Length: 98
Image 1 (spheres, rainbow, N blue to C red):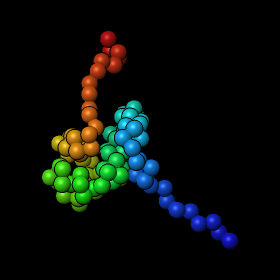
Image 2 (tube, one colour):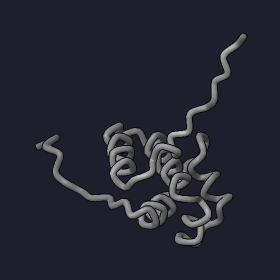
Image 3 (cartoon, one colour):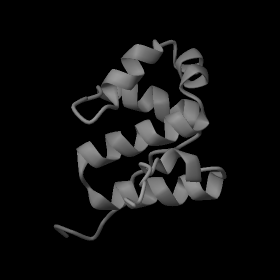
Image 4 (spheres, rainbow, N blue to C red):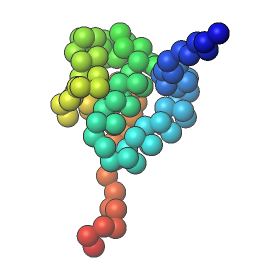
């Protein structure tokens, strides 16, 4: 008998602000724009895409498209979603090129 596998959806495991912060910190540490966008989409799904759409004034379809695997969200969309999710983007000196 073949074993049935179900796809893993990371959005289902992001049930706390701490889990979301760790997930996003990992994405930012990757310095991979595609992965960061994907991670924001996962967090938006975890929080509820309908609510994020309401909070940002963007349509659910636009959000799903922007944060899909083939998506390329604008900075404006990214910042609006981050604000709706309560995720802050900060700057600090990295020590590189000093």
